[in-house]
Image (tube, rainbow, N blue to C red; front, side, top):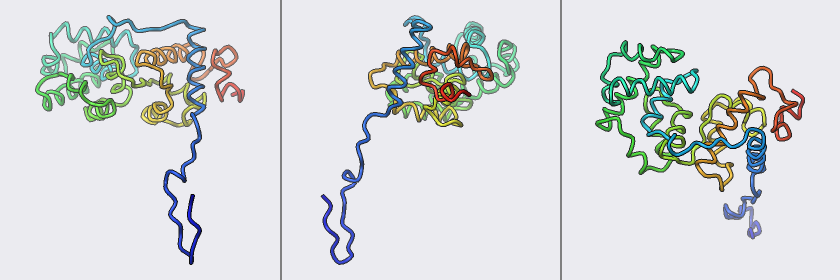
Length: 251
């Protein structure tokens, strides 16, 4: 209990006494309900172990994948490794040759330049294109290391940690995911990918594993491709409309 004020002196109140226990964040339960509703509508979308790629592959996939469909980026990433045999050889290849192999990408020349810069930066620091050292770092530190590389932002860094063989608890957030989180009111309306990530991670249900977070992302991507479209959201038929501020507001 705080002491009485004496002679105009200000009593010292322990910091802990000034903090109120507000209980669990209600957005955590909203995420649980959204996950259950999406599974009920779309079924389970679970990435099998054999579909998890090495972190280096996932990194390359993200660096070249701007505004490109996943299947095209998958094919391009596999083609690079098949052509050159190693990521070190890819880094040494002329940008023009890389661009030729990246014609499936929306911006082949940009993808080639970013990829070469990224791989060369890893080699300059680590001696080879090898991300195994990240397995010894806390997830936050590993993400920070990745984001120092050219062409790597939060979606890609989180993808390396979550969707690869690392299988860490990190939420991958693409445009669909971010838009849905904004429309539901779980994150601020103008939150970018990093802000969305920073808002979501503290409120993700503690019982969710890395696989649950991966499935959550894949389910939200499915929702964004079907009901929660960028320009014409189908709120009336949306399976999560009961937990969406936009749907409840009639927007």
